[in-house]
Image (tube, rainbow, N blue to C red; front, top):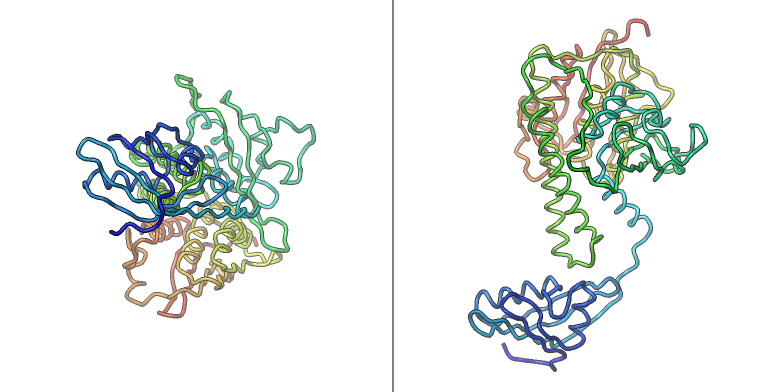
Length: 461
C-alpha cells in the first residue's frame, strides 16, 4: 500500500499490546478512553488492528473509530509489526472528530428501564390499581416476600413492600413511588422499586411492571430464611424448576445485565460493532432464560396429577391486563393492540394466573410475527357453556399442514433466529385443557391467524 498523507501522530506498542509512547492527538484519546500511558491500548478498534498485525506479521491499515464521551473520532491507522516477540509502530495519517449527538430524554429513559430490568432481583406485574398480578424472583433472600406476594395476588404491592420514606397512606400517584425505598422482610439489604407504566397515549396506565433492585450484593454466608411452599404437584422432584433453573438464572441474568450495560454504552464509549456484539450476547442470554422458564413450565404441566386452581374471573379484565403488559413491546413495532372495552364482561371459571399466562403467550407471538404498523385484536365470545377469548393478528398466517403440528413440543414451523423455544403453544394448550377448556387456531396463509382460548363459562354470571 502506498503511503499517502502526512503522518499526524506516531506511537509504539510492545508485545503485550501496551501503548508505550504516543504523540498527540493519539495520546490524549488513549487517556480519554480510560487508558493509561504506558498502558494497554484503550481504543478497541486500534487494539484489534495491532493484534492482527502482530499475529500475522505484516502491515495492516484501515480506518478506526473511537468515542471519548464527547466526540466520535475517525482516523486512518497504519500498523507495522517489528518482528516476532516485539511490538508495533503505529502511524495516524488522518483525524476527523465530530460531536456526539445529545441523547433525547426518551432514549435515556429507555436505557434506564432496560438496565433496571436486567438488574432487578424481583419483578411483578401490577394492574391499574397497583395490585399484584404475577411475581417472579430467583433471589434466595427474597424467598419470603415472593411467597407472600404469590399468596396475596390481588392486593396492593405496598402491603408486602412497605415504603420507608413516605408517611402518607396509599394510594399514591405512581410517579411518587418510582424509585422509592422499601423495607423487604427477610433481608437486611437496602432496596428500592422501579415502576414502569404500561401506557397508551391519551390514557392512564393500564398496569405497571414493578422491579425490585438493590445496590448491595448478597452477603456471603448470610442465612436465608426458609419459606414453606406448597408444591404444585406432590409427585417427583422437578429437575429443571427446582434444581437447574435456580442455579442458572442468576449468572445468566448477570451476563445479560453486563452485556446490556456494554451495548447501551453505560460503561463508556464503544464502537458500534462492539455494541452490536454485546447486543447479540444479551439476546442469547434472554433466549436461555426463556428456555429455562418454558422447561420449568413443561415439567409442571406434564407432571402426573397437575391441576389448576379455578376461580370466577372476568376474561375481559384478564385480556386488558395482558394487553397492557405487552403494550410497550407492541408499540416498538408500531403495532396497535385493540383490547376489550372496560365495559365488556365475560365471566368464566378458570385460574386467573394461567389464563393470563396463555394470553401473554398468544399476544407475544402475535407481536413477534406480525408486520410493523399492523393491528392485533382481542375479542370475546359467549359460547353458552364456554367463554372464548380470540387473539387475531395480521401476520403471515399458517397453512393447514402447519396448524396440524404447531401445538406440538419444540415445533417452530421452520422458523429460526426469532427467539422462540417452540414450547409456548404446547404449554398454553396443556394449561387450557387443565382448566377444562381448549386452545385452537383458525388461519390461512396471508390472512393472519386467530387463536381461540375456550374455558368453562360461569353458570352464575
